[in-house]
Image (cartoon, rainbow, N blue to C red; front, side):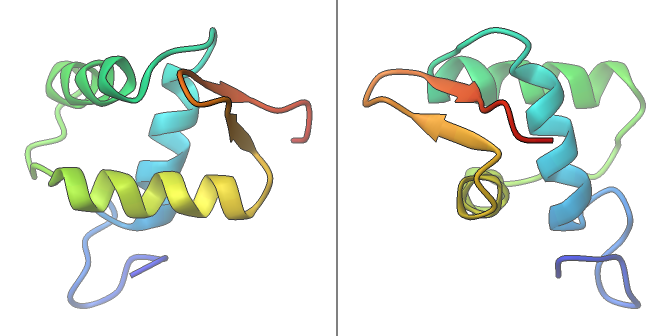
Length: 82
């Protein structure tokens, strides 16, 4: 689930999706804006396997648990940690 394996492709691994989310946060964005930008980015970069909002949320939770993003009640932003 976190990493690609026989049942989870590299396009859908949570680690991959989390990295893609982080790329969308070059500036603070709402969750909805981030979700929309992620879907557009994936479509424009040849990622054929769609992800659900639930999968997006799990990847976002992983970023939050690792201290890589913060949420102020309105917007998401990357933290200074990398």
